[in-house]
Length: 269
Image (cartoon, rainbow, N blue to C red; front, side, top):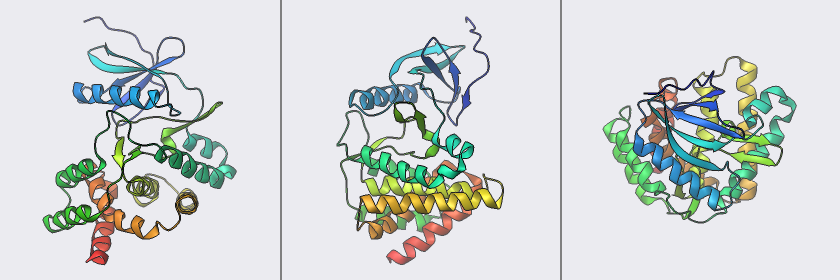
């Protein structure tokens, strides 16, 4: 097997490392445990959302490098929204409102080819959540069955780390969890990801945690300005999406997520 010298990764993620590649490109090199089917799935979605005209990086081919599969993407110059906020904290609230607006623009799209069902994705995750007691799993699945379907494009992992602040405007990355479904469930997912940074302890210091809470409150306020009257449905989705989030086995968030599931499903009885 021919080995290629890649240098140091420019970024690290849960499923892959990011390396500089040829001029104007990056290589998303997946970890050995990530399946070939998963790589092909991401490639199909990346091509589909790019073809739909969304603000996303252009995607190239699947390649094998040093015994691992990777995807070639257009290199987008610019920090993530999260990095931009850390560098310029006075932009915090403006960035939160922008995050909501960019997400609303995504939700304005109808079904994009190649996307799986959000409902099926949530059901599979709830069933796979080992930390979820059987009674809560049953209740979460029952609650999911009562929720309205949707046919909108949903990113599935939309947070400030997955929006790049490029010169041409915000660019959305990491579409592997994209589905078609209900935008409110997608907003709840983003809400949990943002709140989890503070609730789970992955951010150090009370100042940073306070900033996250301000950011989250501003983000949600703008979401509901763009989608007035959706607060009640948002609350109904929260325990369902929290139950699905438990399948990702993030230990520092587990107790907090379980409390959201219990409280939310109790209110729904």
